[in-house]
Length: 263
Image 1 (cartoon, rainbow, N blue to C red):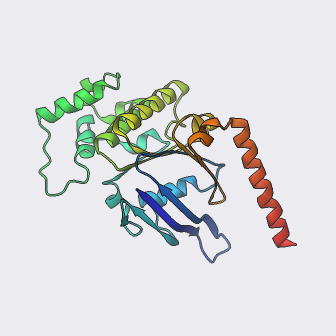
Image 2 (image 1 turned 30 degrees about the vertical axis):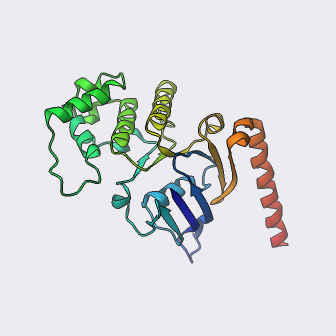
Image 3 (image 1 turned 120 degrees about the vertical axis):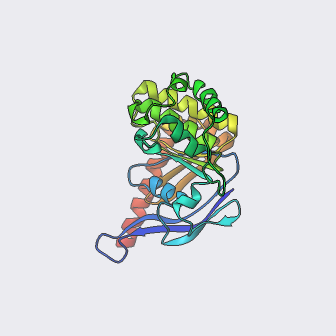
């Protein structure tokens, strides 16, 4: 599904502000994988998503999706098969456009040479999908999305992503900016869609409990590298305390190695 080969990203290369955000990552993602990703701030998690989505380009390495080299494809091209949801609920929708117009754009995403028309049949389809959210949005097709709450907009973003039929979804701490009630609602909706539509998913989270509980595989990142990769029974059996200890042990070894190199 996804193959990442020797991927690196260096910002401000050759200057005093040089920052190696991603350092020679190799990663394979199988179709249907649900991967949770954890790591401290600055570990490279969001930069990895930026590279996969085409928001930025790598300094070195290659990215393949469904057997095709997409390394040099811009974000707008990858958007046809890569869906992404950000922490900020306002980033996934156009607030000055109506709900039905937002959904129409999502529905036809990636189609070329097609006359995009919003008719009663499509509106009925939108109402049916919106009714599953249980927010009353099926009765607000003519309202501008900017009138909706953060939880409503994030739920709408999820729905719009699903109806665009992506091959891969990237969830970048997509519940972190919401209050606890809306965060639970969005996470439950996410799990429902992932299971129902068999979506290949990568989800960044700072909640170790969620990282362990959800998905079939867990990655831990630090200093632009994947330092821990577990799946299956190993992931199911690990505890939060063991995961924290593992991180501390790895960081200690890295620090000791750095001291050796500097001595």
